[in-house]
Image (cartoon, rainbow, N blue to C red; front, side, top):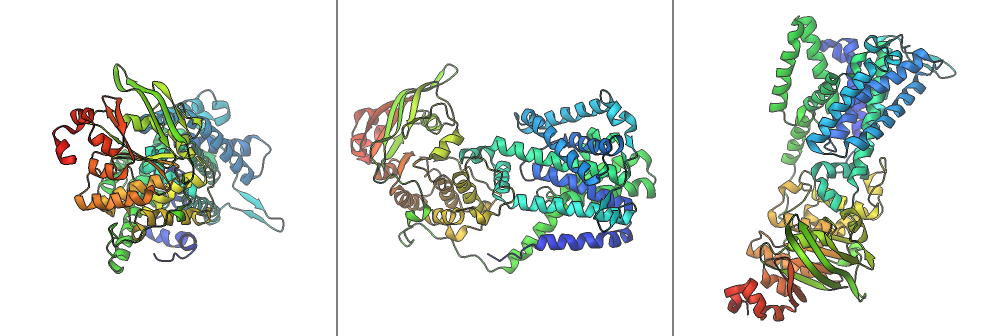
Length: 609
C-alpha cells in the first residue's frame, strides 16, 4: 500500500482557489459567477455528505438554505447586530436546529418515502416564508440591504466590497467547509456513514445505531446549507425569496450529480458547469426560457455517459493509471494444509474458554406471521464453549429461529436469556453490543469498500459503541482498531487481500469475509447461517478447516445443509421440523435416529452412516 502524502488534497485545493479568479475569467466565467460557484459548492458539500456518503436523497435542502440565509439577513438588516461572522454562525446554528427537528420526522422513513417527505418540507417552508412570516422575510420581495462583510482585526479593518475581495472571503469559508468535510469522511464517523450507504441493515447488525448517524449527518448537511445561505445574502447584498423554492433543491441535486456524488469536490465542479452553461445559454446565445430545456438535456447526457460525474470520472481514470503501473497482486492464500494456522489470541475476542454453564437459553420460543407459525414452543440451550449444529429441511424455521436469537425479529411468545440477561425485547444493535452476532446465508458485505474497511466497520461497533460523534478523529487513532482488523483478517485468511475492493474477491473469499465481519465484533456467541452455502468441494474443505480454527475458545451455533461437514464440527446437533425441535443429540445419535431418518435424511441414511 502506497504511503499517502499528508494534506495533499488540502494543498491542491488552496492552489486551485488561488488560481481560479485569474484563470476562470479567460474561460468565460464572470467574477459574479465565480463567487456564486463557491456558494453553491459549499451547500453542495453538505448535500454530498448526506447523499453521496450516506445515501440519503433529500430534496429539502432549500428549506435550510433559505432559513439560514434569512436569519443572517434579518440579523444584519433588522437588528443592531453588525458582526457578519456572528450572524453567519447564528444562522448556521438555527439551520441545524431546524434540521434536527425535521430529521426526527423525515428519517422515520427510508428510500423514496424519505425523499418525498423532504419535498413536502421544502414546499412548507416556501409557503411559510411567503405568507405567515412575510413580515420578517420580506415575502416575495426578500430582504434587501444586507451589508457587505467587514472584519475588524484590531490593527486593521477588512471590507469585502468588490468582486475579488468577496471571492477571497467566500474562498476562505469554502476551504474551511471542505477541510471539515474531509476530516469527517476520514473519521470513524465517516466510515460508518459509508457503511450505511452501502448496506444499512448490515451496519445495524454490526452494532451501529444507524438512525442516530443519519440524524447527525442530516443536521450537519442542514448547517452547511444554512451557512451557504447566509453567504449568498452577504454576497448579493440581498436575500432572495427563491432560496426557499423547490427548484433550488433540485439544482443542488443536479449539480452534485453532474460533478460526482461521494467526492466532496463534485458539487463545486457541478456548480461550475451548471452556472457557466446557464449564463452562456441566457446571455451569449439569448435562448430565453429555452435555456432550461437545453440545460436539462445536457444534464441527462452527462449523467448517462459519466455515471460517477466529472470528479468521479477523473478519480476513476487516476485509479486506472495507478493500477496499471502496479505489479500484479500475488494469488490469495488458501486455507488448506499449507496455510499457517492463525493465532486467535491476537483478536482480543470475548473468549468463552474456561467458563462453564449456560450461555444462551430460549424457552417457549414462538413466532407467528399472521396465521402462519414459523416456530412453535422451542426450548433451546447452549453452554459456554459449545459448538452446536442445527439442521432441518427447507421450511423448518431455521432462519426465523436464528433471527429471533440475534434479536432481528421479536418473538410472538417465549423468552431468550443471554449471559444471564433477558434479551427478548432487545434489538439487533444491542444484541451485537452484548456479544451476540451472526454471519448471513447470503453475503451481506459492503461491496464498494475494501476488505480492510469492511472489517474496520465491524470492529468500530465494538470499540466505540453503537454511536459516537468522533467526526474529526483519524481512523488510525482508534484504540485497538488496527490490531483487531489485522487479527481478524489473519484468522479468515484475508491478510493479503486487506486493501482489495470486496467486489474483486472470489466467492470463497467473500464467504470468509462474511464470517470475518461477524467475528470482528468480538462475539461471545457466534451464529453461522449456512457458512458453506454455494461453495465448491475444495472451498468447503478449506472453510471447514477455517471454522475449526475459529471454534477454539468460542461458542458457535451453525446451520448448514452439508451434514457431513456439520457433524464433523458440532458436538451436539438440534433438528428442527415444521418450526419445532424434533430431536437433539450427538452427531452419531442424530445419524441413527429413526425420526431424523424419516423426516430429514430419508433414503440417504445408509450413505451417511
